[in-house]
Length: 330
Image (cartoon, rainbow, N blue to C red; front, side):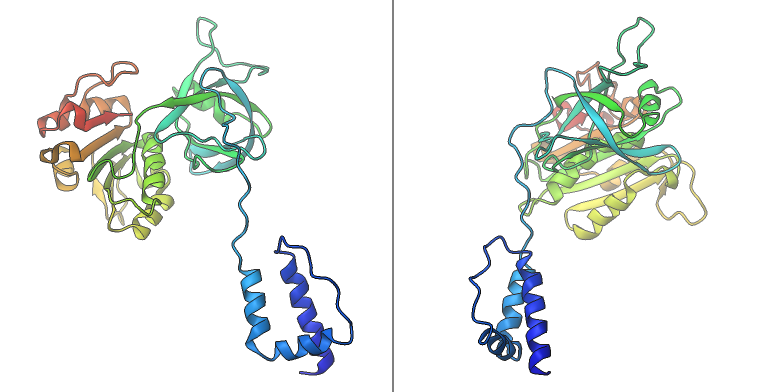
């Protein structure tokens, strides 16, 4: 390499490298000595190592306020930032949070939503009162600037239809967090999860949090029931988690309507499917079963909820010998 070419290449790389450095540039040196130094260094490992260390430095994460923009006592309006279509009846709705803030939602918790305070056509019930519904965000609690929900549109679901009709820039009133279950890393040896349809959101919230914690030793098993394969929400995310954490995450899909190439389980969640995959109740306090899904599924497997209360345990899980303190209904 010629002297001129070596000098120009080294100066270009160093200039680009300095863009990633927060330190002030060094004082200018004599133009007569700098090309000689750069040319010599370029022929050895010194300059390459310097450039490598500077350009591969981890990006500085933005500082996040320790105060959540959410309010557990009052509704706050948040603007819809983006909509990502997921399948034929489901989409991800991403709401914008103030700069340098994150939701800071505890695991596991949800929020409640209603139409915004300035909505031109607020969603009201037959008595003229605001319709309020709970939803569980799927975005990490420390993600700055965004709060994401995955919402399935139901023909009889007034709130789901209302949200699906929101346009970018529209607002939704959100209040929270509403604590559901105080989950702690390594609190249990085994956690079984049974979910149906959009009831997957709280399961994903827990799994994304726990599996990515390097200290996690709990083994999770998720049985996820849907009408068909195309109805499986967050399938790509769950498949990726299973591939990355095969020792601590077991994933079981079951569908009512299987295509010819379907290789998973079929039909409803049965006693046999639970016995095959979920940890035995004989483990006592070392095991927990979470369940969330359509009311009919929850009632059949664990008994009806009593409003916001858990309600008595019944159904398949009780028949299998699980105790009330081993089961939690989201």
